[in-house]
Length: 233
Image 1 (cartoon, helix red, strand yellow):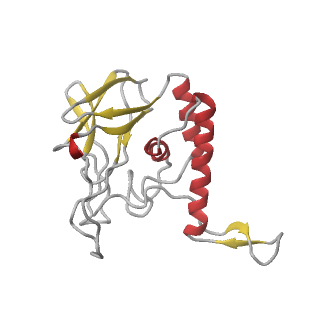
Image 2 (cartoon, rainbow, N blue to C red):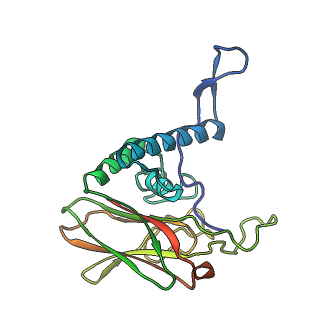
Image 3 (tube, one colour):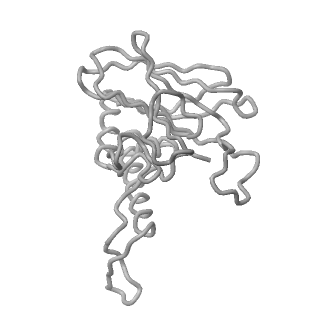
């Protein structure tokens, strides 16, 4: 349905791994069979580190959001794409952001948005440094599943949350892709209505206080609050 997939990538070519031909044998393998466990292992390390500082684990949406928030750029153009998603996993940067949260120099918040409500948070920025603000949430299941349609035009997003950042009358929007033109570079001039992860990047922020605002379109499913995670750095 045009949402950004894959969302994160890592090395999956010529990876040394255990082999079934003997108890001490290794071989070089490749594919998602190598990349997927690498992502899972990094995710587990991040959960372990977060728990060591906070005596609790992150929500799944927070962990996903943290990994995408700190990913290294990959691809021909800035922003996400349909080949590399939001980029190459950077577990060191994600761990450093967890540290920064503990030092109150970054934001990792797990909150909820009530039906027809607005959530705001102000963020102070040092001049010349990029500002990154993202939200992530576990979306409820759609009422039906895809029965085999390739590239369906149906939008399967149920609770359409939106994040925007504003300062002095200027509004910054999250990255979006156009599934009708898959090779087109991502833009950031409108709300994202397809993904349950949204990322705003302001390349060189001024020394000012920015306001991040989270809202939603339509009604939340059954009128119930939607949990979401806000990350800012």
